[in-house]
Length: 243
Image (cartoon, one colour):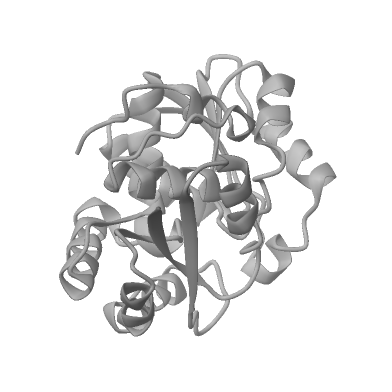
């Protein structure tokens, strides 16, 4: 049994994680601890506070008791908002606190893009445009070429969590670009786990979503390979990207 630990901010799309655990169909256990988000706002200052070391550290002990082999901060905006160097320091601090390999959803996207062997990506973000732009900057720092960015202007994760299949597919279609080799949907508050393969069929290209890449990143840290086509092209490729 491989136990994976996730620090998830608040309550929005956390039910993606047991769904992903089921779709993995293997001896993988997904353990989720909710962190206190403070103010629910896709605004740079609120996001930096949400991802502060104190808020993340509060959930670490519970995950260590669960036997987790790796920990991922399951929040994209609460990591890339620090910039490349700041996000690295966030992960290093989390790893020291936990005594375990650690990462965040922002780095999960960078590693997943590398795993797919693509460079040109489009971004469909629920965030306001300025926050979506920070994610694009983060991807560029990680070596990706961002050919299109679409923001939706949604302020709270709570609102994103109410989106269903129709809103998700509309965002994906509107955000895609013909020159993009993959589409990225970066919000962990967005329910996507049940729809990845359908999105890929619709767009004819790989689709990376926040909760999907977060679990893949934890598997990567735990040195596990799992073939799960229902979770998209990312879960059908080998070997896994090494650190």
